[in-house]
Length: 283
Image 1: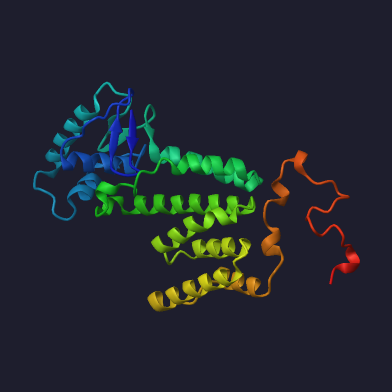
Image 2: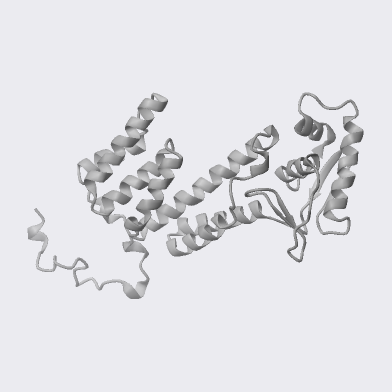
């Protein structure tokens, strides 16, 4: 059985056919259990998550009724079942899959590859992880307090995947191809400074120094007018490096990550057009 929470709640059986979970309360109950995937939850916590501060007088019996119906919806013989453990309940996902867990596995693999400097492999894993997302996590329950923490946690992990993928592509020298995506990202999340840093760097590495500085001013003005704060140290340092035309900003591209067979022999100048110069011409 497969559960999908990276978008609207979806349930499919082992053959890939949609499983209908009827009733808003049963869908909320399943979502609560999925938020705690693999962990047990007390009946009291389930009642509070579903009904808040105004539970029905017969909340305990009503919860039991909904649990029975939810078990029927999922199929009592299916690989994923709701287990009763004393006064607690747990969704046993040992024989099931959850798209959020698959995303996190791909993210961790991508981060490991990125730390090793294997940027191509990192991008493959991160693209695979990001492909699990259909919309915002737990989209059906955007206003439900029980889903808030998990929605925020998954959104932060998705942002980490996007930003790490961008860092890997920047190290591979693909700055120009990233600009349009980054411009869209800062429009959607104008207060996420890391995205501004990546956009500014991509512009600079694409030979658009004036546009890079204009993007910095836009970020600075947005933060000041909407939040009343100055840019963080990362953005300020990047502006200073651009104004000083720090050569390291351009040097931090693909060089170290080329396959061994493509490396230029040490007696050849790798920069076409500079072969006629030597150390005496450094100035």
